[in-house]
Image (cartoon, rainbow, N blue to C red; front, side, top):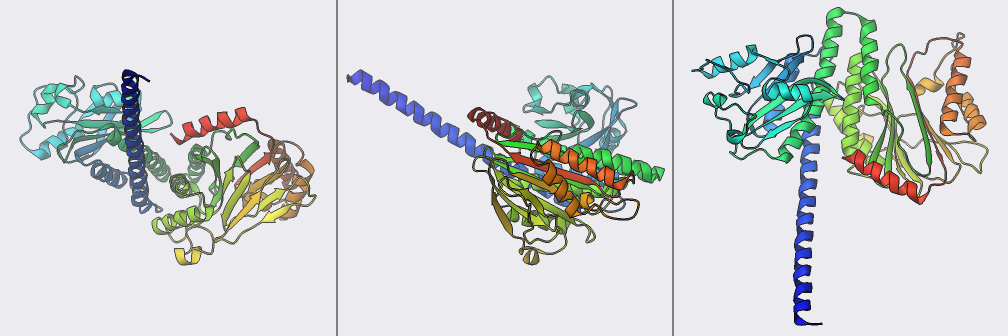
Length: 488
């Protein structure tokens, strides 16, 4: 090997080491940012959880949201603008600090901080006007690092309040914009970064759920129409449930959830923990209407945040229990089964918090197995007592069937006040277990309707069923991509 060739190899190796160290640094920074976002969201939920009562004040909730976001983003000032859908205008509901107007204005001068804030609160911004109106129109966040040289910031407004850097994020549920959150200037004099914007977006997502829920609740309270409350609670509840079951190699998964005339708060979820582990949850929230839906929203957010920190279902349930116990009223509790399924080894670990047993039909056995490891409902007892919650591990094979359900299934009643019961449920599953998972669920629902003879259900009915089958290598590759996309 010549000296020049050796030099080229060494130089290439040094470049490779430099790039590798850079990638590691970026990876660690991403982990740090994700951890910061997770802590911020959980802290936000803790603050909001303190306001879950029978009466909910929108203005007070907005003030808490604004204070929290301004504090966490290290901003000098911030404001929340809500959308008037009929007028297509935005109006500030809370202004914190010396917040400037963010669209072109003519002939206005302010000598006092109070007069500036009062003008901001009175001003109406049309959708599409300025930065606030643009974010409301597009539903896309905006980050302005250098306000002095950015055409999105009219220079005449800096006469009122010097603007160095700012961020604007929509309060959005799915594709519906409810309002806009804006923060201006960092207290440490630095510019806002993409990491700051990501944190603002995460908090804005949680704030949007709270704003939407509180607005729904207040509308219902003013109209004093219980029927409408239940209907809107069901609509809100449906937003929290998965749109579809995940594609998993080697698994045939199906789910069903139908609210009763009186909303009880059933909830189920699928959570990709990593490429090899899928979390499955099914729960029943005690409480009806909007308050029950609020609790469900909080539980869902906490479970999704904590599930990625541990592969131990019991450990995750212990963390969820502490949040529920601290942040809600003593009368609120939730039963839940949470499982972690290794999609490669087909090992399912699960824990139950006072929920119905897990039904398993093994292919080589005629009788079902009911698994009910020890556990107490979430929100009832402190950690020292809740620690009795234990885990169960099941090794699954081709042809095995697992069914999770809420008590609305076995407690469905006919006109003679008789309950459907667990034994009848097991018989239906036994007779349909050779088909697909969806077929098993359909058979259960059909038999419940035959049994109840048209009597309206009094509780929610939720079922998850999955059957083990043979996966392919291509399916494993596809699900790895899907789970990665879900986590981001």
